[in-house]
Length: 322
Image (cartoon, rainbow, N blue to C red; front, side, top):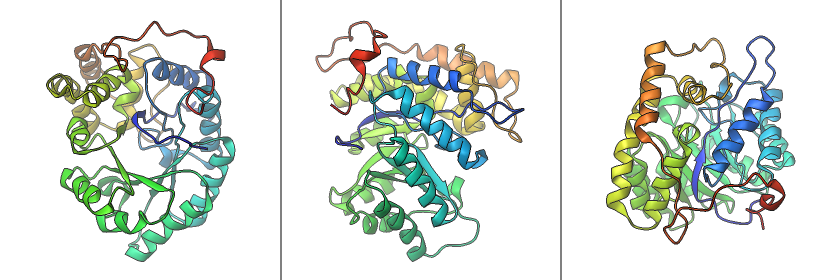
C-alpha cells in the first residue's frame, strides 16, 4: 500500500486487447509500462478513460491491473481506475485491485439515472472505507453523466483516505474552490481538460492523463520545470504540448492514445469495438504533434539531465516503496 504522497505525472494507460478473442495483449502492455517508467513518470493509472474501462469486463480489468502491478515492480505507484454504476460492483473491483497490489484507486461513478447528492457521497464513502489505500475522486461531468461538485468533494475530504481529486470539468475555477474549501485535506491532479501548467501554479500536485502515455518525457519535463519554478520555460513547453491535448479532445481518447503509441512502434492494436480507429489524416496529425514536442529528457533535482537509464530491474525494484 501507499506510504508516500502521490505526486507528478501519472499516465492514463491504454488497454491493449485482441479484438477477436478479448485477451489482453500482455507483451504490449508491459512494453508500454517499461517505456513510460524509463521516461521518468511518477506513477501509473490503468483503467482510466483512456483505458476504455467502459468496454472491459471485470476479468479483463483484473488482468490489466495484474500485469501493470507486476511490470511496475514497485518502482512507481500503480493507481487503477474503479468505475461502476452500482456500489457493489465498485466494491468488488476495489477489493480485487487492492489484493493484486494496487497502491491507490481512482474512483469513478458512472450514472444513467439521476443520483442524489447523498447517493453520490455514499458511493465514494463506502468504497473508500472498504479499502486501506488512498483514493482519488475522479469527476468528469461531460463523460460520466454526473458530477462530483466542489461541495461534495469538501464533504468527502473528511474520509481519511480520500486524499486527492482529479477534476476534468474544464472549469479551472472549480479547482481553486476545492483547494480553498478543503483546507489541505485533498490535493488536486490536473486533467487534460485543463492547462496542466496553470493547475500546477494553483497548487496542483500532478497530472493524470492520456497524453502522458504517448509523450511521457515531455510531460515529466513540464512537471519538473514547474516544481523548480521555471515558469517561462514551463509555459513554453506547455504551448508545444497543447496541440496534443487538443487532438485528444477532438478525437476519441483511446483511439488517439493507441494511434500515438502505434506511430512510435508499439503494437497495442486499435480501440475496442464498436469504437473505430482514427482515419489516416488524424493519425498524421498525431504523428506531427508528437514530432513537434521533441521531448527532452527530464531534469534531476539539481537541474541536470539524469544518467542513462538502465534495464537492471533488480536495482530499481521497490524503489518507490522504499
